[in-house]
Amino acid sequence: MEAPERAPSTGAQGDLPGRLDLSTPSVARMYDYFLGGKDNFPVDRERAEQVIRRAPHVPFMAHANRDFLVRVVRYLVGECGIRQIVDIGSGLPTQDNVHQVAQRIDPRTRVVYVDNDRHVLVHARALLAANPNTHAIGCDVREPLTILSDPHVRGVIDFSRPVAVLLCAVLHFIADADDPYGIVATLVRAITPGSYVVVSHAERHRDLMPATSAYNGANASAVLRSAPEIRAFFDGLELVTPGVVPLPRWRPEGPLFLADDRVRALGGAGCKP
Ligand SMILES: C[S@@+](CC[C@H](N)C(=O)[O-])C[C@H]1O[C@@H](n2cnc3c(N)ncnc32)[C@H](O)[C@@H]1O
Image (cartoon, rainbow, N blue to C red; front, side):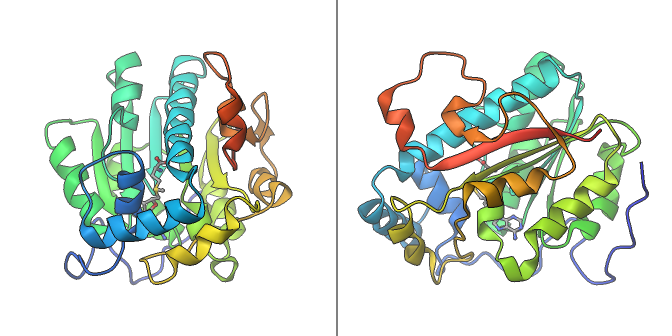
């Protein structure tokens, strides 16, 4: 493993500055609304409804993304021997959270949740309070060195052993100007061979494009990318079969349905050789 480069001197070490903002739509709470959750406010619901009016299949896509995430965690822990997971852009707790899926297979699996939304952090900490193998930190994926050097992260995760880094439905909130490929490359440099990176990402498709403007003024803007652009996040990694595919087609555990073809998001897992 290469030692992580030095983190910037500023940046949160496990906590987030400021107060809970209930006046700006939050992409975490909008996603919670799409999933049928209750951790959202009128400002989030109104904005989520705008998205649904422009792209009615988005809630279905949110469920497909969660299903993908559960399958990928089961695969990595159950079949690849992964016992440490860093889930970045983890979202509000929902049904079948990453640590629950992983720890059902092996209770010793260690999980760190990372999100830059204060509301997510509060809920995640409440859920994890009694779980010694998990931790949640408030940090921004755009500061990967801060994440990698965070003492709480390093207290739970041993970067000299294989780890899975999950980046599910978060990179489409990172603008090109913030160098999402550089962020992933920094994370890949810090993990040891035999580690995995998982990405799911909304696709630049005419079905979704009308919905992106509904994210303007939310706490993150949506950036859709083409299939080749999404595949490029895995450069230098060995892709797990079947590669980077529409989410329902990644190692499905049951039959596929016609509606699954409306999921305009791709995902995959890559192993560091
Ligand atoms: C659509 S949710 C995805 C949640 C979960 N990963 C999943 O796939 O079900 C996106 C999450 O990414 C978080 N997020 C957005 N921008 C972020 C950033 N720059 N740094 C860290 N987290 C971010 C949001 O707060 C939200 O919780």
